[in-house]
Length: 127
Ligand SMILES: [Zn+2]
Image (tube, rainbow, N blue to C red; front, side, top):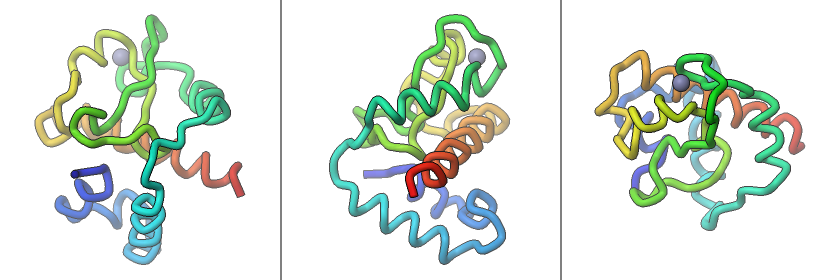
């Protein structure tokens, strides 16, 4: 099963994604994700995500917004902070359940950054 952290690890971009402190932060995040075996999405997360990302993270549109999984559920992705972003319907269907590596790099980067943005935001308000 691949999640966003596996993906970043393979791409060697843990440092970029998680800032200067790099590997340790990356691995501790990864460990935490591994411990979270089930989906842990809550209404609070829902509200916080939509507050932070009130438009499509790719094109900035605000029509027919939906929460999308970075790694599709059917491919083993989970409904957890770090694997969710807000996309409009056209961007959502463009992404569909494709893996990030199969998307244009700009499109994929916007999704990765937005997923990280919400994970950081959630970690800050959670503790
Ligand atoms: Zn869009």
